[in-house]
Length: 124
Image 1: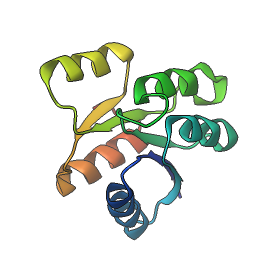
Image 2: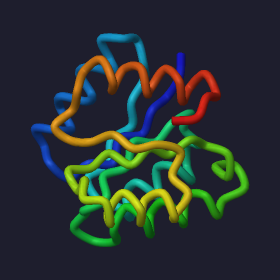
Image 3: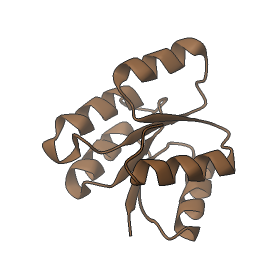
Image 4: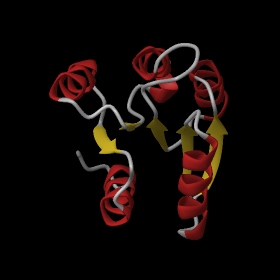
């Protein structure tokens, strides 16, 4: 089964996403800071990363860049998972090269469809 790294500093959001993914049979790794996310990605090479953008140490874009710089994670899909949904935020995320974008609060159907599509090798 696929392993999904969740990088999310909000405990309630983390629990919701983790529980949804586990209910669908996915294994999860969890980080509450950008640095932890980078460390877990480098140690485990997950199949998908769900990355919050607003994190307490390095932001999600910086963490994304560090994860993608590692050859084992260069092609790993990383989806921005954020409440920052202004056009400028979305543009910044798109320009950074994220594989996809999911807005919070999550739309369950869209969330699960995006996860499946990313794991199947599709674009956002």
